[in-house]
Length: 444
Ligand code: DLL
Image 1 (cartoon, protein in one colour):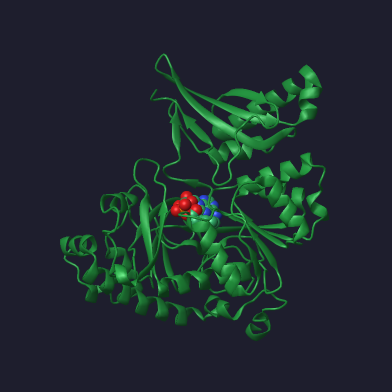
Image 2 (tube, rainbow, N blue to C red):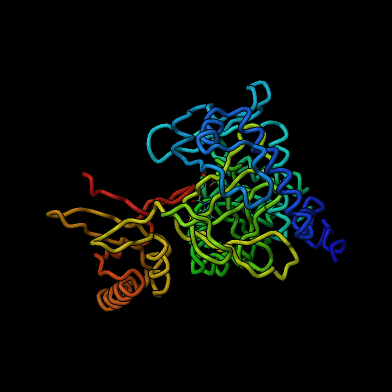
């Protein structure tokens, strides 16, 4: 079966995907060997990790089995900030061939580094990503992830190239040109953030173009949370299959995990990244199947080995094996981060809940923003959401119906009443990369 699946022309299974199908005991063997090596590398070369391990009275030799990973200290985004720019590097600059940076929410960005070997691994895991989304040689991939310091553009670029596909490095923005390229170059697959792609669908509609008539058959989306309702909107609007891919700069960029043909959970490229789920409050590991915070350890990174990185992304491992035949573990799509939660009048709210509520209501568009304010000491939450021109043209009645349905849906899912502003299409600012869903004016 394996052999059949390694057909890089038709089945979308590239030889690079072999590790995805390793028997489980073999995979665990590879992981343990690599874990021991990476811990030693980090201990020998990165002061912060050595100090933290010494504080716990740990030496690299204490890693005897995979479960020993749970004794290692965590790494957080703060550690990357505190050691800005190069403090966590384990290779001399002369071995580092690429730097990327991720804009932090405050102040300085965090910097990540790659040796040549790291770049090869990155291209490989991205090749495996594309293969598991059904792409292969012969596909024409329009890459609208941003090129530059963001890892999305170049990460997807080299993966698609080494898959053998044709890559168009268009980067984000200039939506009309995106559509022209898509049509004129007979593009079959598109990479973008899901929010930017919804904007592309909208612009196509304005231009009188039906994206379902194009050869485009696959979309590879990630870098931000997007709901299942958003997936349906995209798949129906563009006539494509939309796959979710996951990654973060600190670990490598895109290429940490990817959906497969089942579109039901993301397989982790476990031979390179070791996943754990922990209780975000206590830091204790949770068994497969339980929801918590995803923690990742790089198993092969040279330039910047990362031990037990607290991603803040909330998910759970799916314990059942996947019908696709991959043996690597899957996690549920990441709908929220532990730190994008906000609290309104004592109620915990996630933007993804608001998205799920509004996409249930006919007449709304997937463009919205949550605005938080404080009035007389009381927190207020308002949702600004675009509705279709039909809702507006039908004047009062339809508008009031949509408003009532939305208020009900949000109250049902989120648990509180919120202010609603229904606005005309194209009122809310569009993003070419990650969408900004929450505007918090409470500290003003
Ligand atoms: O967003 C890397 C990437 C590029 C992934 C292109 C996928 C596609 P950062 O900018 O460092 O890296 O942001 C990482 O984005 O911790 C998640 O919170 C979020 N994120 C990434 N992919 C997904 C996804 C890139 N598929 C942070 N679903 C992560 C939900 C995602 N959130």
